[in-house]
Length: 360
Image (cartoon, rainbow, N blue to C red):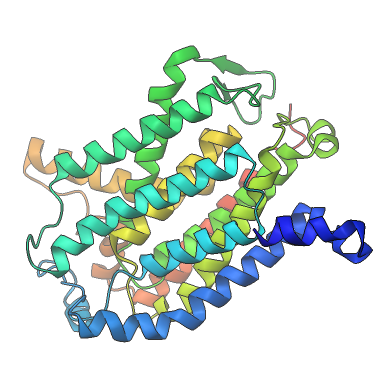
């Protein structure tokens, strides 16, 4: 909205020509989303506390977490709102990819909000039944995957690019749609599983978003993509603005979610952010790189799967508790130490993802 208005003025006021640059608008989007998230959050915290929108803590978890009982939750409402408003302001709304990302953010967040609503109103303390939650996620992902697959501006709609081997490209055809569903739903739930201690998930999301923003900008830039030997995706560069919005919203929320947290994001935040990361990966053809830059999310998910399988098959647990961040807590690591060390690993993995450039 603001982008179209300001850019329209560039014919009369030359400095407004700067709005045609994606990097400039991405920075504006990050600042806008961070400001919205930061300034609205205190009022949201009071509102959530007044309506009883507080977090219930697992009784079988680390004993130190019991002190968090009653902490306001559903902060993901503000995160999603910040992303959507900032992108609407500074993104090109004629770009199909931007519209797909807005739908992904709103859709996955809405599923999480329904889940949170059932929990905080105590209508169902366990939230939305798994069959409905996964069913809605799959339905939304099918819609998103189909939109990406049918996009006439995407020359690589059905391919999977193998990082480090630039000439290795797999054509999935119509089967790319179920593959994209797996990526989006898997990413959404991986972030949800990671959101168990203060600031961990949102910090990792910010790191992953920043790395994805770099990858997407290069893919959308003809000169840089040719020089660095990566797939050139026309029109995809506009998603750098969306990444700026997502990064800024994450930073604004982290101010209140850092240890000790004043607010939790809830499923509305974790499912929404995870689904958005998965959708970004599908659009930018960085599905495998997502598993690298989001390596902590992958490990957290695998720890849950292995724990469940081991207990069902042998009656024994591999970890003291899953997801794995709780395992380290029960080993005696202080919560801030777990968080910062996982962030460090996340930064290293993000840097590793950038090494795919110029490798053939």
